[in-house]
Length: 212
Image (tube, rainbow, N blue to C red):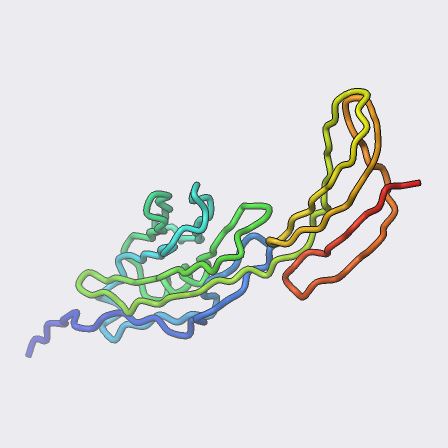
């Protein structure tokens, strides 16, 4: 009796968190470091052919964020900036693809990343079937690592009042100054008048008064 194996099962991905957090200072995050990939068909006869991972909605106009991975020697990996899709291709075993899928990372090279949630969808393919689609939502843990900068240009020999507006997360504070300086008003070590901490996720609000 001759039995002819049939590729009649789709690959399946599991053990993937639906939501993960990327720290701003790290700029990268592993999407599914503990994921599992299975296929009920004969692993020695039917191989995984490819994987796609796509950033579903761009958070930057220049599409500067991207996905990356560490493929083994039997695979090729490329990221298409237009479609925001990472494609891994090349026939390999379920175990080999599982190892590579665990290395897939989301990368945001921007120094001040968008707080918007990113969603990445991943799918695996053998020669005949597509796996389940898995979505991973990425949130960003922002940090307050920038100082307010004040640069007020003034005309020579001008004496006037100036209002400086510091804006952060849609909030603003105003500090009033009265100073005459040629060409540029420079504020060096102004006296701190009020310092108020805001709820988590916002920068500090500060107000200054003119130095003596």
